[in-house]
Length: 194
Ligand code: ADP
Ligand code: MG
Image 1 (tube, rainbow, N blue to C red):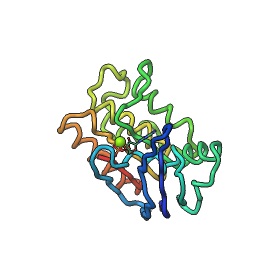
Image 2 (image 1 turned 180 degrees about the horizontal axis):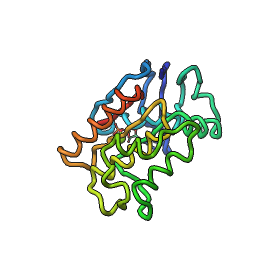
Image 3 (image 1 turned 90 degrees about the horizontal axis):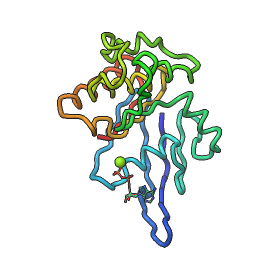
């Protein structure tokens, strides 16, 4: 469960103040898929970043499964993210010198109770490509590797910021259905910007 209570985020740069979030209340239940929609600049990424502890809110309270992440320090937050959260971004951020299998291994290393690498690669439909390198894969396939890397550690929540932003329509649909399937199979809560 993710709970936001009167969460605000104000960016200050010099004299300029930008209110990106203003007293947002939100409740996301376990196992849900929540999609954030809105025009560019409306505060979607800010919302995702403060929900997931990548950034601090200016005020307000954020609770994830009884833990008040808005009052954690940097070290506590890093540990909390590592153990509980998975991230997928528009850029795939794969390590180019590692194979598909090895890239997914990287996500598994930081976890207490991970899935097996083979199981997750199967789930995202990349078994035939397991020994290929990122440059040998299409954009959609590379994004599926980054999804596998995020999911292999069995996160409670997956945060996805425009995961289909760099893909054509066909591949975008495919990625969204992979994310939906993971939600159904593992009851992973998903917060998705698209
Ligand atoms: P979205 O993801 O919906 O496009 P963002 O959350 O990235 O929107 O941005 C919301 C608003 O906050 C925008 O007006 C943006 O210019 C501003 N903003 C985002 N990040 C920063 C930052 N680091 N410093 C100052 N302003 C920012
Ligand atoms: Mg954004």
